[in-house]
Length: 278
Image 1: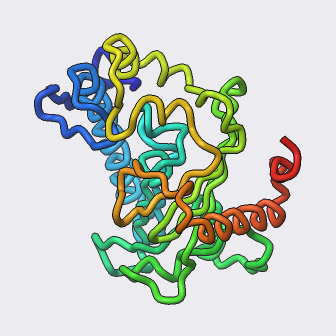
Image 2 (image 1 turned 120 degrees about the vertical axis):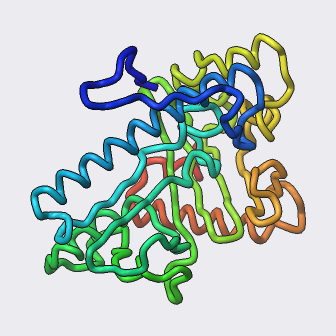
């Protein structure tokens, strides 16, 4: 996690004991996971201090009150079941905005956004005269002060094709407030691990011990995935019970598959042909 052997000049590393870390449900509560989580929390604290120093510089230069700060992450935490996946730990990412134009400090907005929204949002803040229809995303500047914005979108799309070039496991997702639908395009392949995740102490300990589950999910379900996955995020936030194969959800599956296909057509997705040719 990039933790330095010695603190950087002018900084003090904050360390955590393995006993005090909180193990999220997508991970197993093992000594190896706790050891890596303690290091992960240390790196997060260093990031937090770095952002704090950036804010100090903005204030010292008199720029804080005319600067918009947007903090996002490129993927979930570097653990199995998170990074490189499109389960919630992998795609429910931080989006923290500090704007001098907004006053609802410390609030949380539950509007669904994606990183395709970043460019139109930044251009909106800058007052650029651009055609909103020229972007796949939407500016979320107007909903930052609203905790539950009315009239905002009800679904977002997500995708994953590669991590490293050898880690081929394309997935396409549509997520609503209640459901998530995943199309595992190369579902007959074993799930392809990123090198750092496969070699992590957390995963290697699971392989060594021959455990049947990792976190809330079985190892078998994690490595060998079906073509479609459908989860009720309200009733099953850990995304364990796949509803896609149940007859009563057939229409929902067909509707979500159509939404993904339409989105692929709109965005020129080269994996669109996989619906017809396998």
